[in-house]
Length: 415
Image 1 (cartoon, rainbow, N blue to C red):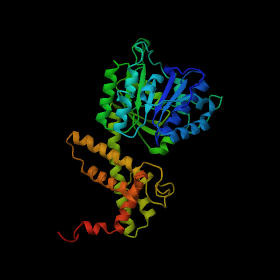
Image 2 (spheres, helix red, strand yellow):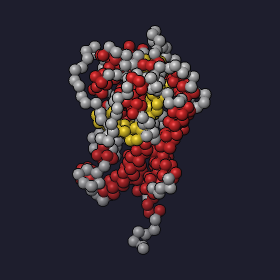
Image 3 (cartoon, helix red, strand yellow):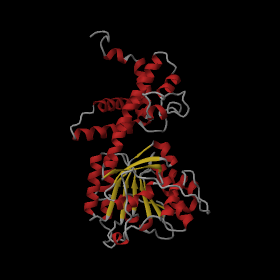
Image 4 (cartoon, rainbow, N blue to C red):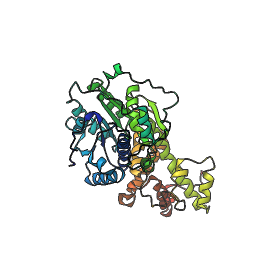
C-alpha cells in the first residue's frame, strides 16, 4: 500500500483513476503529469493529490515507475493507492475509470459494498461543490503539454486554442449562484460498454445522489499509440453543460486538438463508440480478405496496399493498421504485439449486437465479424486473443493452407 503524502489530501482537489491496463496506464500518465505540471507552473492548486485503484501489483509498479520518470519524485509522492471504488470516492472529487467492459463498470460503480456509489452515499450533505479545475489560461496550459513533457520550473508562454466541441454545441459558463447547488463529485467513465448500461448507471448515480454527483461516459478511440501521445479522440455523453464544463480540462490532457466531441446525453458517447467499432471490425476483415486474395493472385502486396490507399477501398485499417510485414510500423511488422487486442474487438462486436438486438435491428455483417473474431481468439491456444486484431489476416491465410474453403463449399461452378 502506498503511503499518503505528509499533507493530508484535499478531496476537492484530488483526482482518482481506476484501471491501469493497456489504455488506462498511458491515459492516467498524461492526466496526472499534465495537471501536476500545470499546478506546478501556475503555482495554483489544480490538483493537490492523486489516488489510484488497480488490483494488479505489477501494473501499479510499472505505472509509478514511469510516472516518476516523467513527473519526478514529488509527483509520484502525491499518489496514494486504495483498494476499491468506495474508498476512492471518499478521497477524490474527480474520478476516472477505464475498465474491461460492462460487468466491471457496473461492479466498480454500483456494488453495494465496495462500489463508488456506496462511498458517495457516506459523504456529508455539506460536502463543498466542485470549483473550476483551472482558469482559462491554466486550461490552455494543460492542453498544451505533450505526452513527453517533463517537469521544469519555467512556465511556457505559448497559448494554443482549446479543443472545440462539435459545431452545434455551446456552453454557458456556470455562475457563482449556480455553483452553490453544483455537484461535489465528477465521474468520468472511459470504458467501452453497453450504451444501455452506461445510461442506466448514470441515471442511478444521479438519482441516488440528488444531483450532487455528475457522471459522463467518455470512451476513446485511437488505441495505445494515441493514448501514449495524448492524441485520442474522445466522444462523450453528458447530462448537463455544467458536467461538460467540469470534465473538459481533464479530457484535454488525453485528447488530440479538436478531438473531443459532445454526442448528446448519457450513453450517447459510448453509443457512438460502439457504432464506430462495429464498422472497424468489419473493415479489418474486409482488408484481410482483399490482401489475402491479392497475394494468392500473385500481386505484389505493397503495390496493392498503396493502390488501396489511393482508391475507394481505403480505410483507417488500410492506412494505419495493415497486417503486411513489409509496411514499416505495421502490426504485421511487430508480430501483432501491442495495438488493439482481438479479444477487445470481439467484445465490441458483441456490444453492438446486444444493442441492435434490443432494437430489433438486423446487423448481419457484425454477426459474421463476431464469429470470425471468436475463432481467431482461440488460435494459438488462445494466444491470438491478445494480439492486434489485424492478425485476422494470418487466420485467413492459415485456413487457406489448411484447405478449409474447399471443405466448406461445393463446386463454385455449380449453380
